[in-house]
Image (cartoon, rainbow, N blue to C red; front, side, top):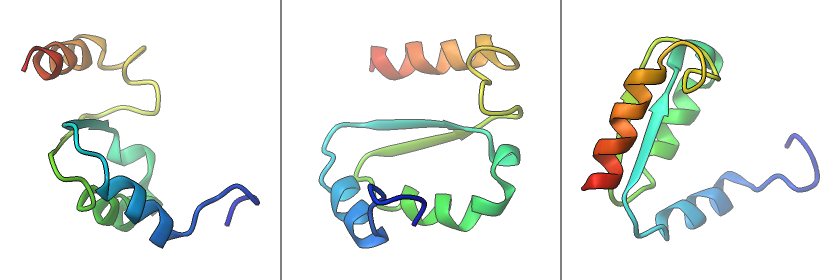
Length: 79
């Protein structure tokens, strides 16, 4: 655990499985190469989930992929 406020994986799973709304994750897999297994597992916890992988880093929505992220968000919130 990173700190005293960190949740166990079992707690994370319970919380994420209870989310009923649609979820869009715009991910930058190259930014978290050591967390791929962790990401994949947690993605399965959502009921209605869409993941879009884009190149870039943590701030792809502000730097590298602004137009692509904006398009994805417009589509997501328009549905």
